[in-house]
Image (cartoon, rainbow over all chains, first blue to last red; front, top):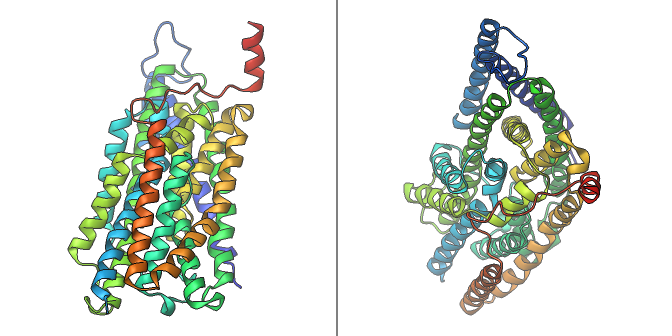
Length: 76
Length: 380
């Protein structure tokens, strides 16, 4: 009986890395976007509006690229 | 030879199985999106249904084997396929009535194994393959997806806890819709393919199609529509279980769970260790629940699901075995199996009408309350 431990480990590693990276990118992107337009009664933003916009744009763009790669994997 | 009758019966039964498959698995993609309100229930199932149909047309690689090597493929004939499908359909309907997510593929394999056992003996079943392709992945997939979703949930909450609430909610809602859509699309490409494979291989065996030919366009269309329609009608009972009864799921958790599900399914499909969508999605939802508050997760529900998962294969196998025995007795037996199967299906549907779960009331259950919250409520 052969259990493909190698490919199983690879699946675990790749899916862990991909999911965590996407989750972190979207989270950081949202933190960035939230800093763009702080409300008077809202919490103190962690970043300045300009930095927030840049962080948000970069993180979300990379996340979108990863999603597009996922789409490519499904279609191809 | 009643080849034409049994071939027609197999095609109809395969499409019925495809329908229950879509119906059963809507929850995998959409349960958390519906529970968090990221999508309205009817919009969610419409998106999932359309993406399932699109997925069916996108897939170029149709399953080459019916059982993925679980049984001796040379022993499979249309009667065995019919019996296996009946076992799978009835198990899918029963677990739907109970609102329990269970793997449609495991039900199909179970039905086929039972049918082959009766028709060709234990020697035709490859038990080592059963361990490596069914039992081991069933243990690993929910744990893997759960751990990933747990870590993802912690990251999502920790990183955004000092940011504006509205923006955070809106952001994760958007992310959740995208990741849920990917799950639905991936489901269409993999699961509609199975039905196409079953029908195509039956047509080849009957001499209607040349060996090694691909599915005719009407098979792709029928399989895609059957799974899409099933998905659209939505197994609301299972959606309620996964979205509301496991834990009180919020938007960041829904996003983390769906992202984990998508990543595990795509990685496993492309690295050669196929895992069950249902088990991955279920594990991810439990992990996301635990990532916010371990005490907020209803572990008793997990126990019920574990029992259903363990029973799926043997239960479908028993039905498949009985059906195979009856169907092999000739036309009368085959018709009898069909009539009994339809009668049981109608009975299960009738039972479901007593406590209907629909798009309108799917979220109308009190969210599970953690023990320490219960104390606070009691003291208040």
